[in-house]
Image (cartoon, rainbow, N blue to C red; front, side, top):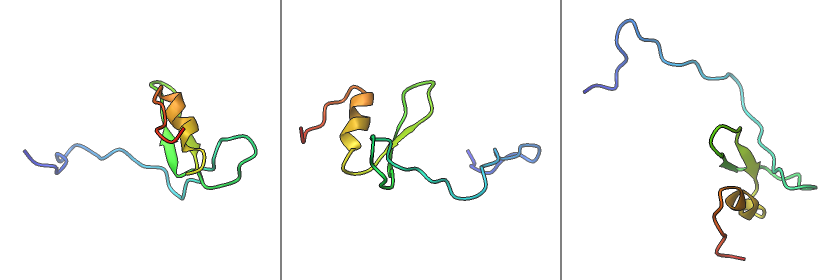
Length: 65
């Protein structure tokens, strides 16, 4: 099996440019380096300090609480 696309197959286009994801915790202005996605909804982004907010979205308890 090969990873090469077939001749008539085109790879899916990706958006151009850099995407800026900032933390969605209220009042936070830090870079949101951790993305969390619930099926069928757009991803939500959180910084290191607020990563637990994203874990809670997925129903996972953070071990640091």
